[in-house]
Image (cartoon, helix red, strand yellow):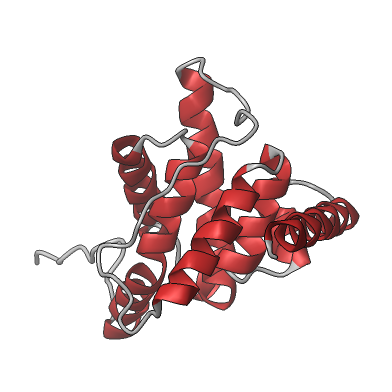
Length: 180
């Protein structure tokens, strides 16, 4: 009697739904994050993000479901740094350097004043040291807690807090100096 060998991993509708929702929610922010880490190389960033999602698919959904965003950003960061190390291109962002990636779909209803304010703040963030830029973006653009940022960047929670506090104080002072 021939027995059918079951597939090692059969995707349930629940798991497929989790993967679809996770991809839809985090793909854009991950590509932007990876592009910054890879010094503006969007093509390599998309490859890193694709690899990140391939690794997610290899994980049982129950293992990462409660902390999917943190897991994805951590894996993405490690993959991007691996790419840089492999290529011998590990360099810090130069003072004032920024890699801007815009979302495929523009956000509707944005007022001109908000766009100008946003651009001014991004310009100020560009002038922050790279470690402050990274934690500020993880905190305010991606909504991670200090603890999550700590796990993503391998910095202590205290160091993350100090970097964010220092960056925000500097941004406030510089923003106030720009406004009449």
